[in-house]
Image 1 (cartoon, rainbow, N blue to C red):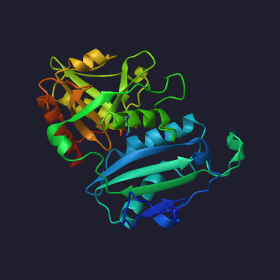
Image 2 (spheres, rainbow, N blue to C red):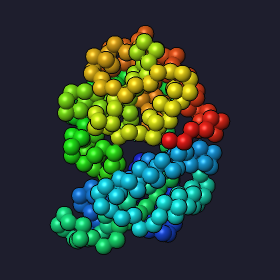
Image 3 (cartoon, rainbow, N blue to C red):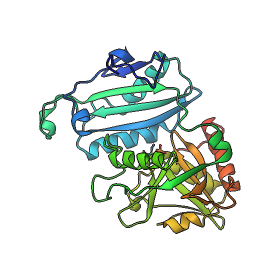
Image 4 (tube, helix red, strand yellow):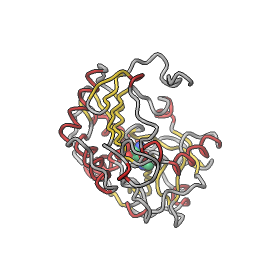
Length: 302
Ligand code: PMP
C-alpha cells in the first residue's frame, strides 16, 4: 500500500516495541539499509501468550539467543530485559492471548554483506491476535501436499537458527497454495521427510509416535518438544526417526505442531487419506493434553 498501511491488519491499532520504545505501528519503521531487509540477516521467534502467561518463554529465549550467537549477532539487551519487553508490549496492547513476533536484525548499515557495515542491531516485538488456521480444520483435520522445494541443506546455515531468510519455506508455501492446500511437507536433500513450511510433523504407527530427527535438517520446534514430553507421560513410545513419504501415506494418524498451529490434525497427504481419513485418537489425546498445558494445568518445561 502506498501509504504504508497494512491491508491484512485492517482497523488494527497495534503498539510495537522498537529498540526500547513502544510506538504506534505506523511509526514502527526500520531503515531500507537494515541488513535484515537487504539480506535477511537476522533472527526471529514466534511465541504465544495464553491468559497473560507467555508459553515456554525460557525455551524461546534460549533459541533466540543461541540462534543469534550462531550467526555472530549480538542482541543488545539480555534475555531478562527481552522477556520484560515482551510483557510490556502485551500490556501496551491489552492482550492476554496473543501471538508474539520477536525480531532481531543485524541493523542499519550500507550495501555490502559484511556485518562490519552495520551499526547496532534492531530489535522489535509485535503482539497481535492471530488464528493461524481456520478453526474448523481442528475439527475435521487438514489436507496437505508434498512440495518439490526441499528444506535447506543441513550443512548450510542450521535450521535451528530461525533466521529471517525463509525463502525455501515460502516457495513450498506457494506450492501448497497452488495445490489448494494450506501447508506442505518439505523433504530434505536425501528425500526424507523434514517438516512442513512452518510446523513440525508427527505420525502415529502401530501405537508409536514418530517424528523426523534434528539431523533431517528440521527446526526442532518447542511445541514438538512439549508434545514429545506429553506423549512420554502418557506412556506412548516416542521415536525420532527418518521417515519417507511412504511412511506418511501408511500412517495411522498424522499431525503438525507449531507455536501458531498448536496441534493440527492431518487427514490427507497428497490426496491419500491418512488412517481412516478422520482425526485419530492419539492426536485427540495429545491435543487435549496440550491445551491443558497452555492453561497451566500440566507443567512441562522444555
Ligand atoms: N518448523 C518451522 C520451519 C517453523 O518455522 C516453526 C515455527 N513456526 C516450527 C517448525 C515449529 O516450531 P515451534 O513449535 O517452536 O513454533
